[in-house]
Image 1 (cartoon, rainbow, N blue to C red):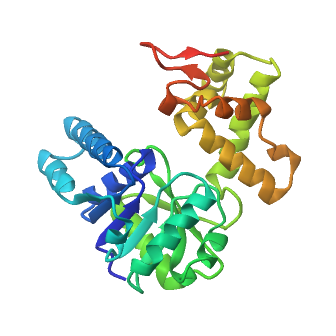
Image 2: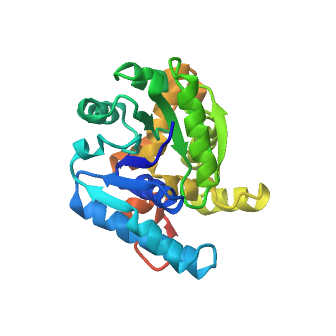
Image 3: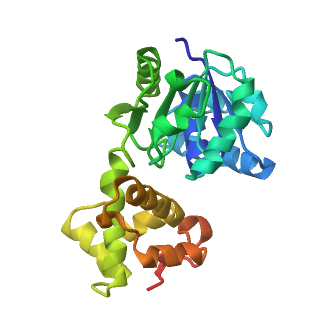
Length: 291
């Protein structure tokens, strides 16, 4: 399969990062969102991040200009129809993803590979509701996409070898490393990471430590670059809760029960950095713990 054009659904934190790395690797990118404001914000973020790479000598000014020129935007999902590869990078809610696929499928070429950047939802189940389960895969990038080296590749039960090999080649061309994960809830990274974050929230909930002490303990005691509660805010508390619910429902084990405090923060709309409040308050010059 010769993949040259890539359609990306969702221009948020993950979508704009995916568009960034594909354009920089020489692919023509068509970025879709339901909001023109979101698309313009995404382009500004991509340009800013490319400029940061150029200022550090990682790419040239010519590389930056060429990458920006390869990215087009659209509000119409149907416009992604002629692309060779589609990556869905919408919110981590299965019903939303399925609606996107339902609306997109009538417009796709028969040979187009369809993928989801889901971090936890069953690839086999998503694929079974499309007209191309053999050409459907999980394509899970890590955040922030331009920085993180890993891409999880998850094949559904019907995914064919040609699709698998094509996406391996795409990852190689992006200059990243592929990790093969089986189609179990949350795959590899989040199967391990999210229960750790959830346990950190339980530690806060039970009064074992404050936000600051929990994060400092993991940074200084386990050499983590970022504390678990700080990381949860970076990921988005709604995303963390969604993944824990997938783990709890999919594996039916009480050890994956989401902490009630995590649920409470999400219900309050305190989702982390993207809403300026989570386990930290980001509205001032420096983040301040909220508990």
